[in-house]
Amino acid sequence: MTARPPLQPGATLGIVGGGQLGRMIALAAAPYGLKVHIFAPDADSPAFDVSSERTVAAYDDVAALARFAASVDVVTYEFENIPAEAAEALAAKAPLHPNAAALATTQDRLTEKRFINDLGIETAPFRAVDTPEDLTRALAEIGRPAVLKTRRFGYDGKGQRMIRAEGDADAAAILADFNGAPCILEGFVPFEAEVSVVAARGADGAFAAYDPCANEHRDHILAVTRVPAPGIAPQTEAAAIGIARRIAEALDYVGVLAVEMFLVPQADGPARVVVNEIAPRVHNSGHWTIEGATASQFDQHVRAVCGWPLGDPSRIGGMAVAMHNLIGDDVEAWATILARPGAHLHLYGKGEARPGRKMGHVTELLPKT
Ligand code: AMP
Figure 1 (cartoon, rainbow, N blue to C red):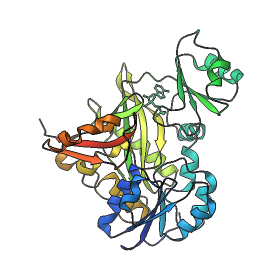
Figure 2 (figure 1 turned 30 degrees about the horizontal axis):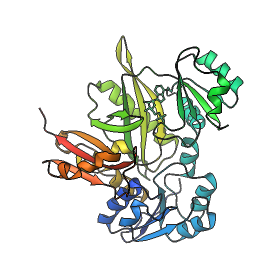
Figure 3 (figure 1 turned 45 degrees about the horizontal axis):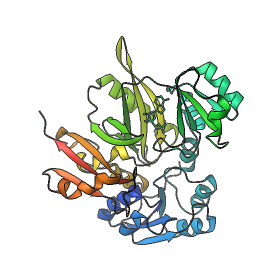
Figure 4 (figure 1 turned 90 degrees about the vertical axis):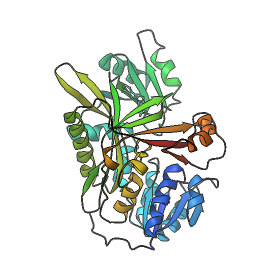
Protein backbone atom coordinates (compact mmCIF):
# COMPACT_ATOMS: atom_id res chain seq x y z
CA MET A 1 0.00 0.00 0.00
CA THR A 2 1.30 3.46 -0.84
CA ALA A 3 1.54 5.45 2.36
CA ARG A 4 -0.29 8.75 1.95
CA PRO A 5 -0.30 11.62 4.40
CA PRO A 6 -3.46 11.75 6.49
CA LEU A 7 -6.12 14.21 5.33
CA GLN A 8 -6.47 17.53 7.15
CA PRO A 9 -9.77 18.83 8.56
CA GLY A 10 -11.28 20.99 5.84
CA ALA A 11 -10.44 18.41 3.18
CA THR A 12 -13.21 17.06 0.95
CA LEU A 13 -14.46 13.50 1.14
CA GLY A 14 -16.06 12.24 -2.07
CA ILE A 15 -18.77 9.61 -1.70
CA VAL A 16 -20.11 7.62 -4.64
CA GLY A 17 -23.75 6.80 -3.96
CA GLY A 18 -26.44 8.99 -2.45
CA GLY A 19 -28.54 6.65 -0.29
CA GLN A 20 -28.87 6.45 3.48
CA LEU A 21 -25.41 4.97 3.90
CA GLY A 22 -23.82 7.91 2.08
CA ARG A 23 -25.97 10.24 4.14
CA MET A 24 -24.79 8.71 7.42
CA ILE A 25 -21.12 8.77 6.28
CA ALA A 26 -21.55 12.47 5.45
CA LEU A 27 -23.09 13.14 8.86
CA ALA A 28 -20.11 11.43 10.53
CA ALA A 29 -17.67 13.53 8.50
CA ALA A 30 -19.20 16.82 9.67
CA PRO A 31 -17.81 16.85 13.25
CA TYR A 32 -14.29 16.67 11.81
CA GLY A 33 -14.78 19.77 9.67
CA LEU A 34 -14.63 17.71 6.49
CA LYS A 35 -16.58 18.75 3.43
CA VAL A 36 -18.52 16.13 1.51
CA HIS A 37 -19.19 15.84 -2.21
CA ILE A 38 -21.74 13.19 -3.20
CA PHE A 39 -21.88 11.60 -6.67
CA ALA A 40 -25.24 9.98 -7.45
CA PRO A 41 -27.46 9.59 -10.49
CA ASP A 42 -30.73 10.57 -8.80
CA ALA A 43 -31.36 14.26 -8.08
CA ASP A 44 -33.54 13.22 -5.10
CA SER A 45 -30.76 11.30 -3.32
CA PRO A 46 -31.12 11.36 0.50
CA ALA A 47 -27.40 12.10 0.97
CA PHE A 48 -27.61 15.36 -0.99
CA ASP A 49 -29.52 16.94 1.94
CA VAL A 50 -26.39 16.79 4.11
CA SER A 51 -23.55 17.41 1.65
CA SER A 52 -21.95 20.64 0.54
CA GLU A 53 -21.47 19.57 -3.07
CA ARG A 54 -23.22 17.21 -5.42
CA THR A 55 -22.75 15.72 -8.86
CA VAL A 56 -25.82 14.23 -10.51
CA ALA A 57 -24.56 11.82 -13.17
CA ALA A 58 -24.70 8.16 -14.13
CA TYR A 59 -22.27 5.65 -12.61
CA ASP A 60 -20.92 4.89 -16.08
CA ASP A 61 -20.31 8.54 -16.98
CA VAL A 62 -16.53 8.23 -16.90
CA ALA A 63 -15.89 11.92 -17.63
CA ALA A 64 -18.17 13.01 -14.75
CA LEU A 65 -16.54 10.49 -12.42
CA ALA A 66 -13.09 11.77 -13.32
CA ARG A 67 -14.13 15.43 -12.72
CA PHE A 68 -15.70 14.45 -9.40
CA ALA A 69 -12.61 12.53 -8.23
CA ALA A 70 -10.29 15.35 -9.30
CA SER A 71 -12.28 17.77 -7.11
CA VAL A 72 -12.02 15.78 -3.84
CA ASP A 73 -9.17 14.56 -1.60
CA VAL A 74 -10.30 10.95 -1.21
CA VAL A 75 -13.08 8.87 -2.73
CA THR A 76 -15.15 6.24 -0.99
CA TYR A 77 -18.45 4.59 -1.87
CA GLU A 78 -21.60 3.35 -0.18
CA PHE A 79 -22.45 0.43 -2.46
CA GLU A 80 -20.50 -2.25 -4.25
CA ASN A 81 -22.02 -2.31 -7.72
CA ILE A 82 -19.69 0.31 -9.13
CA PRO A 83 -18.58 -0.78 -12.62
CA ALA A 84 -14.87 -1.63 -12.93
CA GLU A 85 -14.32 1.20 -15.45
CA ALA A 86 -15.87 3.67 -12.98
CA ALA A 87 -13.54 2.47 -10.22
CA GLU A 88 -10.57 2.90 -12.57
CA ALA A 89 -11.67 6.41 -13.54
CA LEU A 90 -11.98 7.35 -9.86
CA ALA A 91 -8.71 5.75 -8.74
CA ALA A 92 -6.80 7.55 -11.52
CA LYS A 93 -7.69 10.94 -10.00
CA ALA A 94 -7.87 10.38 -6.23
CA PRO A 95 -7.10 7.75 -3.60
CA LEU A 96 -9.98 5.24 -3.67
CA HIS A 97 -10.82 3.49 -0.36
CA PRO A 98 -11.71 0.67 -0.16
CA ASN A 99 -9.57 -0.20 -3.18
CA ALA A 100 -10.76 -1.34 -6.62
CA ALA A 101 -9.69 -4.94 -5.90
CA ALA A 102 -12.09 -5.08 -2.93
CA LEU A 103 -14.89 -4.01 -5.29
CA ALA A 104 -13.96 -6.45 -8.02
CA THR A 105 -13.68 -9.37 -5.58
CA THR A 106 -16.95 -8.75 -3.78
CA GLN A 107 -19.31 -7.65 -6.57
CA ASP A 108 -19.34 -11.10 -8.16
CA ARG A 109 -20.53 -13.92 -5.89
CA LEU A 110 -18.36 -16.48 -7.71
CA THR A 111 -15.11 -14.48 -7.41
CA GLU A 112 -16.02 -13.66 -3.83
CA LYS A 113 -16.59 -17.28 -2.77
CA ARG A 114 -13.38 -18.47 -4.47
CA PHE A 115 -11.44 -15.72 -2.71
CA ILE A 116 -12.94 -16.69 0.67
CA ASN A 117 -12.25 -20.42 0.15
CA ASP A 118 -8.66 -19.62 -0.93
CA LEU A 119 -8.19 -18.09 2.52
CA GLY A 120 -9.23 -21.45 4.02
CA ILE A 121 -12.60 -20.00 5.14
CA GLU A 122 -15.78 -22.01 4.64
CA THR A 123 -18.69 -20.92 2.42
CA ALA A 124 -21.73 -22.84 1.20
CA PRO A 125 -20.71 -25.33 -1.51
CA PHE A 126 -21.19 -23.63 -4.89
CA ARG A 127 -21.00 -24.08 -8.66
CA ALA A 128 -21.03 -21.57 -11.49
CA VAL A 129 -24.22 -21.86 -13.57
CA ASP A 130 -24.56 -20.39 -17.06
CA THR A 131 -26.70 -22.98 -18.85
CA PRO A 132 -29.52 -25.43 -17.98
CA GLU A 133 -26.93 -28.25 -18.29
CA ASP A 134 -24.72 -26.51 -15.70
CA LEU A 135 -27.71 -26.24 -13.36
CA THR A 136 -28.69 -29.90 -13.75
CA ARG A 137 -25.08 -30.96 -13.05
CA ALA A 138 -24.71 -28.54 -10.12
CA LEU A 139 -27.96 -29.79 -8.53
CA ALA A 140 -26.77 -33.39 -8.89
CA GLU A 141 -23.47 -32.52 -7.21
CA ILE A 142 -24.69 -30.15 -4.49
CA GLY A 143 -28.12 -31.66 -3.81
CA ARG A 144 -31.33 -29.96 -2.72
CA PRO A 145 -32.42 -27.70 -1.22
CA ALA A 146 -30.16 -25.21 -2.92
CA VAL A 147 -30.23 -21.50 -3.69
CA LEU A 148 -29.72 -20.13 -7.20
CA LYS A 149 -28.46 -16.54 -7.27
CA THR A 150 -27.31 -14.11 -9.91
CA ARG A 151 -23.56 -13.61 -9.63
CA ARG A 152 -23.94 -9.83 -9.68
CA PHE A 153 -26.34 -7.11 -8.59
CA GLY A 154 -28.25 -9.12 -5.98
CA TYR A 155 -29.45 -7.42 -2.80
CA ASP A 156 -32.20 -7.90 -0.22
CA GLY A 157 -33.00 -11.33 -1.68
CA LYS A 158 -33.43 -9.96 -5.21
CA GLY A 159 -32.00 -12.14 -7.99
CA GLN A 160 -32.29 -15.38 -6.06
CA ARG A 161 -34.50 -18.42 -5.86
CA MET A 162 -34.70 -21.43 -3.55
CA ILE A 163 -34.78 -24.78 -5.32
CA ARG A 164 -36.53 -27.15 -2.97
CA ALA A 165 -37.51 -30.74 -3.55
CA GLU A 166 -37.18 -33.02 -6.57
CA GLY A 167 -39.89 -32.12 -9.04
CA ASP A 168 -39.41 -28.37 -8.60
CA ALA A 169 -39.52 -26.84 -12.09
CA ASP A 170 -36.93 -28.16 -14.56
CA ALA A 171 -33.55 -26.51 -15.01
CA ALA A 172 -34.42 -24.67 -18.22
CA ALA A 173 -37.61 -23.20 -16.70
CA ILE A 174 -35.81 -22.09 -13.54
CA LEU A 175 -32.99 -20.43 -15.46
CA ALA A 176 -35.43 -18.70 -17.81
CA ASP A 177 -36.46 -16.48 -14.86
CA PHE A 178 -32.88 -15.20 -14.64
CA ASN A 179 -32.87 -13.79 -18.19
CA GLY A 180 -29.51 -15.27 -19.10
CA ALA A 181 -27.63 -13.61 -16.20
CA PRO A 182 -24.57 -15.60 -15.05
CA CYS A 183 -25.56 -17.44 -11.86
CA ILE A 184 -24.19 -19.43 -8.97
CA LEU A 185 -25.86 -22.38 -7.26
CA GLU A 186 -25.24 -22.60 -3.52
CA GLY A 187 -26.00 -25.49 -1.22
CA PHE A 188 -28.54 -24.56 1.45
CA VAL A 189 -26.80 -23.90 4.77
CA PRO A 190 -28.82 -25.25 7.74
CA PHE A 191 -28.09 -22.29 9.96
CA GLU A 192 -29.34 -21.57 13.49
CA ALA A 193 -28.55 -17.87 13.23
CA GLU A 194 -27.23 -15.23 10.87
CA VAL A 195 -24.59 -12.92 12.23
CA SER A 196 -22.39 -10.25 10.79
CA VAL A 197 -19.07 -8.81 11.79
CA VAL A 198 -18.72 -5.13 11.02
CA ALA A 199 -15.09 -4.08 11.27
CA ALA A 200 -12.71 -1.34 10.25
CA ARG A 201 -9.16 -1.51 8.94
CA GLY A 202 -7.04 1.60 8.97
CA ALA A 203 -4.48 2.78 6.42
CA ASP A 204 -1.79 1.64 8.88
CA GLY A 205 -3.25 -1.88 9.05
CA ALA A 206 -4.91 -1.39 12.45
CA PHE A 207 -8.04 -3.52 12.81
CA ALA A 208 -11.09 -2.88 15.02
CA ALA A 209 -14.16 -5.11 15.00
CA TYR A 210 -17.52 -4.53 16.62
CA ASP A 211 -19.04 -7.41 18.55
CA PRO A 212 -20.72 -9.81 16.12
CA CYS A 213 -24.43 -9.03 15.84
CA ALA A 214 -27.39 -11.30 15.10
CA ASN A 215 -29.56 -10.38 12.13
CA GLU A 216 -33.20 -11.31 11.56
CA HIS A 217 -34.61 -10.90 8.08
CA ARG A 218 -38.22 -10.50 7.01
CA ASP A 219 -39.08 -10.96 3.34
CA HIS A 220 -35.30 -11.14 2.68
CA ILE A 221 -34.76 -7.65 4.12
CA LEU A 222 -32.91 -7.03 7.36
CA ALA A 223 -35.52 -6.32 10.03
CA VAL A 224 -33.71 -6.48 13.38
CA THR A 225 -30.10 -6.51 14.54
CA ARG A 226 -29.19 -7.47 18.10
CA VAL A 227 -25.87 -7.24 19.80
CA PRO A 228 -24.47 -9.18 21.53
CA ALA A 229 -25.77 -12.01 19.37
CA PRO A 230 -28.03 -14.01 21.72
CA GLY A 231 -26.46 -17.29 22.82
CA ILE A 232 -23.30 -16.99 20.73
CA ALA A 233 -20.34 -18.89 22.25
CA PRO A 234 -17.16 -16.89 22.93
CA GLN A 235 -15.20 -19.23 20.61
CA THR A 236 -17.66 -18.59 17.80
CA GLU A 237 -17.41 -14.83 18.34
CA ALA A 238 -13.62 -15.02 18.22
CA ALA A 239 -13.73 -17.20 15.09
CA ALA A 240 -16.12 -14.77 13.36
CA ILE A 241 -13.94 -11.76 14.14
CA GLY A 242 -10.81 -13.66 13.05
CA ILE A 243 -12.46 -14.40 9.70
CA ALA A 244 -13.33 -10.73 9.13
CA ARG A 245 -9.75 -9.78 9.95
CA ARG A 246 -8.23 -12.29 7.51
CA ILE A 247 -10.55 -11.06 4.76
CA ALA A 248 -9.72 -7.39 5.43
CA GLU A 249 -6.00 -8.10 5.45
CA ALA A 250 -6.09 -10.20 2.29
CA LEU A 251 -7.88 -7.36 0.46
CA ASP A 252 -5.44 -4.76 1.87
CA TYR A 253 -8.66 -3.10 2.88
CA VAL A 254 -9.02 0.45 4.16
CA GLY A 255 -12.44 1.40 5.55
CA VAL A 256 -15.37 -0.44 7.11
CA LEU A 257 -16.54 -3.79 5.81
CA ALA A 258 -19.22 -6.24 6.89
CA VAL A 259 -18.95 -10.00 6.64
CA GLU A 260 -22.28 -11.82 6.76
CA MET A 261 -22.08 -15.29 8.21
CA PHE A 262 -24.25 -18.29 9.00
CA LEU A 263 -23.82 -20.11 12.32
CA VAL A 264 -24.31 -23.83 11.87
CA PRO A 265 -24.98 -25.85 15.05
CA GLN A 266 -22.53 -28.66 15.82
CA ALA A 267 -23.35 -31.73 17.90
CA ASP A 268 -20.00 -31.65 19.64
CA GLY A 269 -19.15 -28.01 20.25
CA PRO A 270 -19.69 -24.37 19.40
CA ALA A 271 -21.40 -23.40 16.15
CA ARG A 272 -19.41 -23.46 12.90
CA VAL A 273 -19.02 -20.21 11.00
CA VAL A 274 -19.85 -20.25 7.27
CA VAL A 275 -19.39 -17.00 5.35
CA ASN A 276 -22.31 -15.86 3.19
CA GLU A 277 -21.03 -12.62 1.72
CA ILE A 278 -18.80 -9.60 2.14
CA ALA A 279 -20.07 -6.03 1.88
CA PRO A 280 -17.15 -3.68 1.10
CA ARG A 281 -18.83 -0.77 2.83
CA VAL A 282 -20.68 0.35 5.91
CA HIS A 283 -23.64 -1.93 6.51
CA ASN A 284 -27.21 -1.88 7.76
CA SER A 285 -26.30 -4.34 10.53
CA GLY A 286 -23.85 -1.74 11.85
CA HIS A 287 -26.38 1.08 12.33
CA TRP A 288 -26.65 0.21 16.03
CA THR A 289 -23.11 1.51 16.48
CA ILE A 290 -24.25 5.17 16.09
CA GLU A 291 -25.58 5.22 19.63
CA GLY A 292 -24.42 1.80 20.84
CA ALA A 293 -20.64 2.03 20.36
CA THR A 294 -18.02 4.56 21.34
CA ALA A 295 -17.09 5.15 17.68
CA SER A 296 -19.81 4.42 15.12
CA GLN A 297 -19.18 2.45 11.91
CA PHE A 298 -19.56 5.73 9.98
CA ASP A 299 -17.02 7.47 12.19
CA GLN A 300 -14.62 4.53 11.74
CA HIS A 301 -15.08 4.62 7.99
CA VAL A 302 -14.33 8.34 7.79
CA ARG A 303 -11.29 7.89 10.05
CA ALA A 304 -9.96 4.98 7.99
CA VAL A 305 -10.36 6.57 4.56
CA CYS A 306 -8.80 9.82 5.82
CA GLY A 307 -5.77 7.91 7.09
CA TRP A 308 -6.60 8.69 10.72
CA PRO A 309 -6.42 6.44 13.79
CA LEU A 310 -9.45 4.20 14.29
CA GLY A 311 -11.84 4.85 17.18
CA ASP A 312 -12.99 2.52 19.94
CA PRO A 313 -15.53 -0.09 18.76
CA SER A 314 -16.64 -1.19 22.23
CA ARG A 315 -20.27 -1.03 23.27
CA ILE A 316 -21.23 1.94 25.43
CA GLY A 317 -21.29 0.71 29.00
CA GLY A 318 -21.28 -2.87 27.71
CA MET A 319 -25.03 -2.48 27.08
CA ALA A 320 -27.01 -4.71 24.74
CA VAL A 321 -28.41 -2.93 21.68
CA ALA A 322 -31.32 -3.57 19.32
CA MET A 323 -31.79 -1.88 15.94
CA HIS A 324 -35.09 -2.13 14.05
CA ASN A 325 -35.38 -1.06 10.45
CA LEU A 326 -38.38 1.04 9.49
CA ILE A 327 -39.44 -0.48 6.20
CA GLY A 328 -42.20 0.94 4.02
CA ASP A 329 -45.22 1.93 6.15
CA ASP A 330 -43.35 1.24 9.43
CA VAL A 331 -42.14 4.81 9.16
CA GLU A 332 -45.64 6.11 9.86
CA ALA A 333 -45.00 5.28 13.55
CA TRP A 334 -42.24 7.90 13.70
CA ALA A 335 -44.03 10.20 16.15
CA THR A 336 -44.79 7.34 18.54
CA ILE A 337 -41.19 6.16 18.38
CA LEU A 338 -39.97 9.69 18.99
CA ALA A 339 -42.02 9.84 22.19
CA ARG A 340 -40.56 6.57 23.51
CA PRO A 341 -37.87 7.25 26.10
CA GLY A 342 -34.49 5.92 25.00
CA ALA A 343 -35.49 5.30 21.38
CA HIS A 344 -33.09 6.85 18.85
CA LEU A 345 -34.99 7.59 15.66
CA HIS A 346 -33.28 7.97 12.29
CA LEU A 347 -35.24 8.97 9.20
CA TYR A 348 -33.48 8.95 5.85
CA GLY A 349 -35.44 11.78 4.24
CA LYS A 350 -36.85 9.58 1.47
CA GLY A 351 -40.08 10.64 -0.18
CA GLU A 352 -42.44 7.79 -0.81
CA ALA A 353 -42.69 4.88 1.68
CA ARG A 354 -42.89 2.08 -0.91
CA PRO A 355 -43.18 -1.51 0.37
CA GLY A 356 -39.70 -2.92 1.06
CA ARG A 357 -38.05 0.51 1.03
CA LYS A 358 -35.75 1.26 3.97
CA MET A 359 -37.11 4.56 5.31
CA GLY A 360 -35.27 4.79 8.61
CA HIS A 361 -34.29 2.83 11.70
CA VAL A 362 -34.60 2.98 15.44
CA THR A 363 -31.97 1.96 17.97
CA GLU A 364 -32.48 1.16 21.65
CA LEU A 365 -29.84 0.47 24.28
CA LEU A 366 -31.12 -2.15 26.67
CA PRO A 367 -30.40 -1.90 30.37
CA LYS A 368 -28.17 -4.67 31.67
CA THR A 369 -30.17 -7.28 33.58
P1 AMP B 1 -27.88 -12.99 0.26
O1 AMP B 1 -28.48 -12.13 -0.79
O2 AMP B 1 -26.81 -13.89 -0.22
O3 AMP B 1 -27.44 -12.18 1.47
O4 AMP B 1 -29.06 -13.90 0.82
C1 AMP B 1 -30.22 -13.37 1.46
C2 AMP B 1 -30.70 -14.30 2.54
O5 AMP B 1 -31.10 -15.57 1.97
C3 AMP B 1 -29.65 -14.65 3.58
O6 AMP B 1 -29.57 -13.67 4.58
C4 AMP B 1 -30.17 -15.99 4.09
O7 AMP B 1 -31.22 -15.80 5.01
C5 AMP B 1 -30.73 -16.64 2.86
N1 AMP B 1 -29.68 -17.45 2.17
C6 AMP B 1 -28.88 -17.02 1.18
N2 AMP B 1 -28.03 -17.99 0.80
C7 AMP B 1 -28.29 -19.07 1.55
C8 AMP B 1 -27.72 -20.38 1.63
N3 AMP B 1 -26.75 -20.80 0.82
N4 AMP B 1 -28.24 -21.22 2.57
C9 AMP B 1 -29.25 -20.82 3.40
N5 AMP B 1 -29.83 -19.60 3.35
C10 AMP B 1 -29.36 -18.72 2.44
